[in-house]
Length: 337
Image 1 (cartoon, helix red, strand yellow):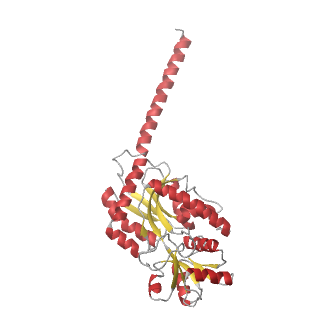
Image 2 (cartoon, one colour):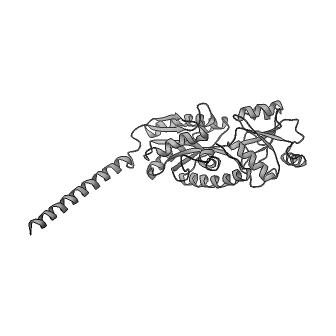
Image 3 (cartoon, one colour):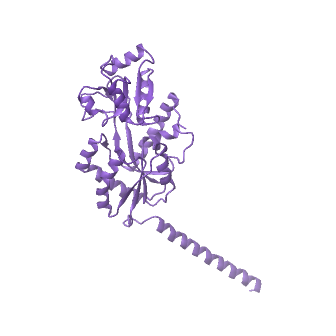
């Protein structure tokens, strides 16, 4: 072997050694980033809630956390990051390491409708997250002041067709699930209602109660007592099934609009790429907390319905909701800045 050949052989061995070392380091790093089955979790978990403290979603998360802490053996720390219809908080989650230690609680807006409402999004809900599980569904009620010359949904639709644009309907804010519920109702009924945005369900319910607006789409906590007292007329609930707290109030579908379903919801997502065994562990503990009888009763008192399920079912639901609301938003020409 010549000196030149010996040098070339030595250089090749050196390159192979360096390559092997690099591969070993990459393997170690990958294992460090993705916890092995049975090792998760070994430190606290950050739960980014895209709602301010005190709301129903925040309340649900905080009532589930103690049970999750117990079963996971680690603290779940709630981090409230509201803003831009949930986009602010979920943008943080999308950029977090995909190791299961940063989770997000997002609603129908940020995880499905916002892609059609906002001209620009800081993330892609269908690509940047791995769904962990649904937490709860939030049914709404279409209510009216007793002075409205209609007592059923069919009568209400007939009245609106008789006098197009004469009836206004309040909702919880532009782009909210209540707003989209009102838009879908008008589209399916073939009527024109003047939509009036409020800063939340409570103010809309109060103005309907006072007769400042004839109609409103509101949640249960802001309207249930007034409905039971006869101070508000409940025309229909927006969920696909009747509600245990209002068993005599028909669904919108039962009232003459078959196929109508507009339910608010929120659930847990992790960054895309989070290992399947980590997602499975989190999903199991979330579902166990939702199945707790005390938690279920407390959630229903908040006007929300526990909705446990698999990550796969939640992912499919997000895709379905995204497609449905894209059409409603386009037809109603709703846009947010």
